[in-house]
Length: 304
Image (tube, rainbow, N blue to C red; front, side, top):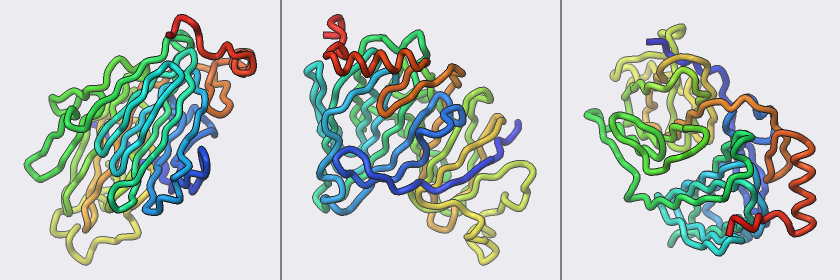
């Protein structure tokens, strides 16, 4: 079985979004073909309530799906179709914007004032860009959690993995979305479909993704725990890792363990015309979307 090489690593960049929310962006708005079908990935994490108090007031989306995963704190959401709710720690919301929706997301810290979550944007193929909006709100307790013999924990948000299927379904990108925790000193392999674009995002601890061409990256447990471990070779907090082709991901955890998201999706391979929260296939479709916004035609009558 061929091992996928890590072809690039990069740190998420500090960014301001919404009404002054401080977050870190791993990728987005540049070269969308690199992560096709995924468009953008944000890590909104802060211990200072003033850094996210303004939230994300009313804004439009068309032509995409947004995936929000909350780890700490909560997010109140509402939209132009009359939907409203609250995402708490461990919860997921998968929103298909389709033909168009206006919504807002207002984060609140936990009892310590801490807020942490992720938002991923997935593109829709042209045949589905004008579909009716749809929500999937999933409580954390509904997400399958698998614990391996070595203590590795995998939460299956969407897709099928180790005999479990995530509760989010019917997504155009047919994605695999996993939250993985690997204990200190452990090395694990994770099978991923060869034809899916795949990335990992590290947010706790550190680790090294290895391939068959770098045997030094594959260490025994005693070596990982010993002085031989070169910390500079490891990727840590807020690191994005993009993979090449292959059938499995191999990773070893550092001395403090490792937690990361593993995301894979089938490329759409269509033209992208993108401005802000609206993603279409052509400039003409993009212009039509903004014309609809200006003329109060953005929300389609048959979506109510």
